Length: 275
Length: 165
Image (cartoon, rainbow over all chains, first blue to last red; front, side, top):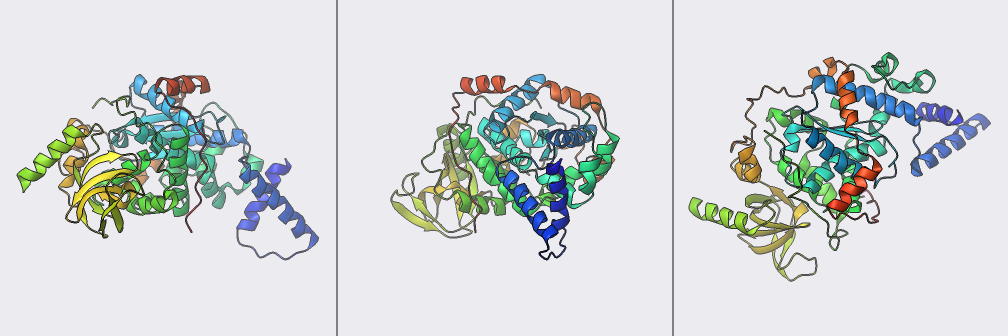
């Protein structure tokens, strides 16, 4: 309960109000420091069941716009790769779900609580399992750092703590009210820094999972030369920094730390999607 | 010129097990070309930002390239694939040919599958059956471990990276 209160208070502070130092405010600062500590230790700042309920609602809406590809072997394969990658994160216990959805767009989506989807358009660019692992690991990065929840916090989710009752079945009207219309949330841009952070997390999680670290950079290089006016990358380019910028930033962050680390690419095991 | 390039492309395709190769690229930043894919290998030459290269092969974080400046290995993250539109066909390689990608880099929109624009996402209705189906494919921790072992993937520690200053 205290946990929940501190979260709301932290939001109030983040909203840019100036603070002095009377006893109440000092107490507040202390609470916020605890909140920050929870972040460091990887504990979510809202109850995990609420996080999952929000993610499930978003996932359901996304699947309303683009259905799951009807290929059970493909879906199982993607879940195996994704789960193994997510296991290497500080939140292995989330109910992770991965899927490939019917869209020629080149894109991938993450929703809170561990719902992650890549489009058919992106999947068919992949040339190795390590590249798939890299793409999924980027989305895992968004989930474990709660990037989308932060967007919701900044807008209308302020009173989430007191309102939300997590339900795991059916569309939840209360949750829907918090995330806006449909799956709109996944088309919103995250902070650029959040994207760079997810990229840095991706190469590390892929490495921890035993893969070649350069799967995600490889796919970024592929996407980098799509024409800007190509409709299939329009949303991706609109909501993410340009792949060239992401590669440059990653290059600086990775430096020579991966030089002696060899990983598997598993080209032959990559499940080839049916056209 | 064209013949040479195709020849080179084919040779690279045949030589490289990875099939990542056989395409052109551009230096994203100045970087050294080295004789081997190691940071302390002998320096062959130096690429300047914007230099055109032919990518021959990939090895971990390194690309073997040939360029006007010389041939050797450059860090993968210093190279952007492709230069002009023409490279797209080669870039997607064999996969591109089988997936209906033409040399223009565009997907032939013949499947009737819609794109995902903001309006469509906004208007999307909750699909309970869809989520249930998606959830039915979930892998347990045990399944994931077995899957990893089959691919000889071993978990190993590796620290997160700091944000560049």
